[in-house]
Image (cartoon, rainbow, N blue to C red; front, side):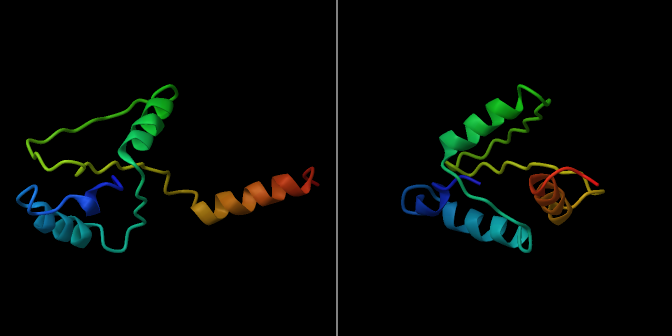
Length: 94
């Protein structure tokens, strides 16, 4: 999510507070990473060089309210990947 969103106030953009509350409820329990919007766009640009990117747009006009979702495979967890990388760093497989 955009790191700028917490700084957008309801006094500037009506509905910003309600949106933050709603998205917080929807994403409860999920790992949420916040980065500056320009860094997120750079990450998407880089990923687009290897993968296809799907962009869904809405008519909502609250600035910095974008939600970017990165899907990972479900057959291999982040912990399994971390363990594999640690084994590889330790040396050749036996």
